[in-house]
Amino acid sequence: MKKPTSEQLDALLQIAASTDALFMPMRPASPGGGNIAEFAGGWLCSVAESRQLFGRSGVPFAAGGSMAERQAAGRLLASLATLGLATVYSATWRRIGVSLTDRGDLWIRGLSGGYTPSEAWTILRQILKLTDAGCVNAGHVSESDILGVGYDKLTSQELVDLEHRCIPLLVRGWLTSSCDGDGRVGYSITDLGRTALARTKPRQPRWLPMPNDAAFSRFSELYKLALADRQTWKSQRSHVLIPLGAGSWPERPEVAGSTDNRSASFTSS
Image 1 (cartoon, helix red, strand yellow):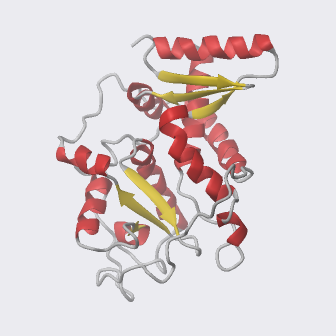
Image 2 (cartoon, helix red, strand yellow):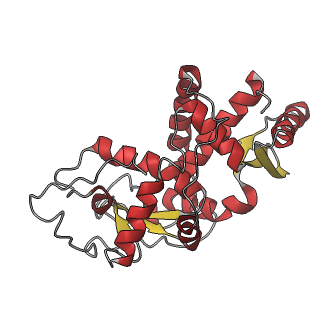
C-alpha cells in the first residue's frame, strides 16, 4: 500500500478519532435521577441519531470557512478515497461526510495502537454466548458479565479497556451499546455480528503497520477533543432515548456476591 502523506495521515487520524468517539459507549454525565435532560433530546439522543446515520453519511470532516478551504478538504478526502482508505459522502456547508473503509480502519488502528476485530474476536464470542444463555437486559449483555466480575470489584481501567476493545466491533455494526440511568453499559450482538462469527476469525493483515508513538499521541489528542465535543451535541429530533432498566440486569452466579471470576484474557483466539 502506498504510504499516505503527512497531510493524509492527519486526516485519517481525525476521521478515526471522530468515528471512535461516536461509537464509544455512552454514560450519562449525571448518573441517577438527575439525568433526564440527557436522555430527552440531549447529547445522548444526538449521538444515537448520528450512529443511525453513520452508514449513509459517515462522520463530519471540518472543511473550513472559505471556498478555497472547502475545495482543499474535498481534494484531500478524494485522495484518501483513491487510496482505498476512505469513503466520501455528500458535502454540506463547511462539512463533508466521510468514513474509513475497512482497509483504512485497520491500517490506522495498527499505526495508532488501537485494537482490530481480530483482537476483539473473543469478546464478540463471549457476548454471543451470554446472549444465547439469556443473560441479557433488553438484549444487552452487561459489561460486568462480559468481564466476569461484579461492579464492586471492577476498576475503571478494566471498563475503559473493554470499551476500546469493543469499538472496532461497534464501528462495523457487529455490536450496539446502550446504558441504564446509572451509567452501566450493555452490549448487544447484531445479525451482522452473528454472521461475522459464523465465518473464520479474521487474520491480522501482513500490511498492518507497526504502532507509532507520534500517531498514537495525535490520535489520543483528537479523540479526547471529539469525546468532549459530543457532549455539546443537541438532538435534531424531538424524541426521548429510552435507557436500559437499571433494575433489569440478570444475576449470574459467577459474578454474584464476592466471587471474583474475571474472564480469561481477551487476546486469546
